[in-house]
Length: 440
Image (cartoon, rainbow, N blue to C red; front, top):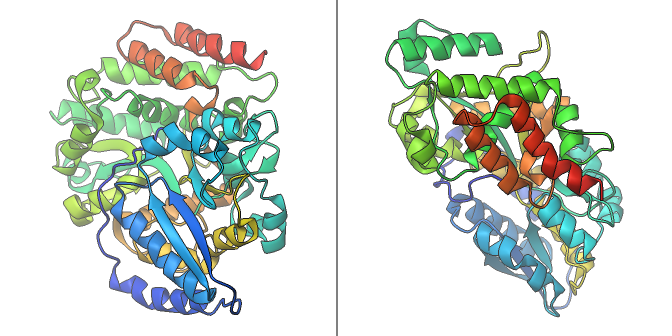
């Protein structure tokens, strides 16, 4: 996964959400199941550092306890890096948590399934209608895997409460000063980049010192030139798939052209992600490409002067897609001692009523909430997620493609942007890793 897990806290919910929150809390509190013997449910998240998300989860914990007398939740928060470094060892032990976050992707979720460390959730999904809550594309991206660990098909092992997608944040005042409206096609976006450069502005705030942001830049363009289903099938290792395609060559050529034209921040290869996004937040660029986990920070710093859009499609009349997934997926360890109660907890925190609580807290729920999304950039984030969910126009992160693909693609993007690889040699380098793994 290439999402940042250290984003700043979100601002408090707007008053427009408060009535919705009150109703949602009442619904959740009313889902009582009657008295039961004293039970402790151990819940583990990987949101360490994301204060707002942890606070929302603990609010849902208290509501679950109220709805299930006799149940006490022990909530443990780990950082994302600690979670993924220790999950296999922890889940193979004799005392795993009852419910835990797991990272999506072949190298994480896939390997845990292959090692038989997770519980299939299909029966619970059918019982409570999870397939009617979330799009088929999202459930596939977040939690499906085969017994051999191949992601993108097979049984359901994880489901998310929140949604993340990568898009284009834009500075409204700078676009207005350039005499340009919000771009509606990829060609218009490139026109805006050129105009910004001519005017002495930084077109796109971007830093690639951390390596993973380059995936966002490249895959965002790829999603603008290729159908989401095609990109997703390749990530999931569909038979016959490869990266040496016309769409990948076009996306690679576009990203390389932008780098050569000076559309990215000066010295981007040595600039960190946090520094680049901070530059945008301080009014130092017209655009930046990153995920909705930065929405709260953007709203706090730029107020009403920031908007968020999907990178427009290059395919005339086609709905734009995006690299997207749920937040970390919730799963039940195979050795969990309270599986039925664990499943009930997951059902509770992924319910429509819980989604309203999450949205009222300023986050993007995985379930599309019918209530008004709110104004400003937070509304843009929720509206964009709803569009992606409705059209299934989302694909997971490219580094999920093989266990070693993160290292392969991040290095290849660095070389591509530096002009050390042609688009063709870039695609060939990706396939060197990808085809070797999927041929075995």
